[in-house]
Image (tube, rainbow, N blue to C red; front, side, top):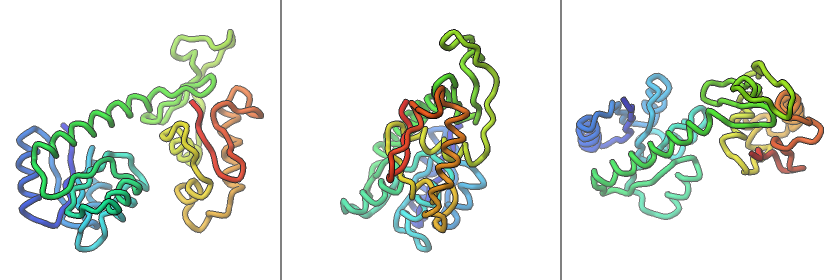
Length: 237
């Protein structure tokens, strides 16, 4: 059963959404403010979050940032803020969709179904990403040589599991979830080590070298884990 966390400080909206979603066989949790939302998301692990921006304690955009620090679950913003900048801020922070109040239940349910479908496809894609002679499964956090799946690559035997450290997984996960996109050094350093380490670019160089040695066919001339000098890194499928 799909778990949906509804975050809103209006009791009547919480009640209406809980009744309508439960009637359609969703498992529903509710939170009246941002702090409760972040705690419940960490403890309950919902499959989707419906989030109001105008919360009494933490702005909804900051809640999105907090969630995106550790999870890729879909987030649908449900807000009375109709300004374009509010939408841009929410989407830039990592929201997947934006519904403006007042809203119809049917419209929200359609958005929930659409976002859930996209997430399911995305998760399936994340379970089988090829890098050189290896297949990466981000959902199970495993890397195997392709011959494990009954194939021989370039006439050579490539088998067995490749072990990655937690930090290597963190960096690789960010890159693989954004295929073709340039990910800045600052973003990677902040996400992996924290804001105090934004100038420690040698950390990234060291870990990217390790990832290439483990995953690329020719680590000295990588085809997938690419450096954009002075800017950041890019995963090329």
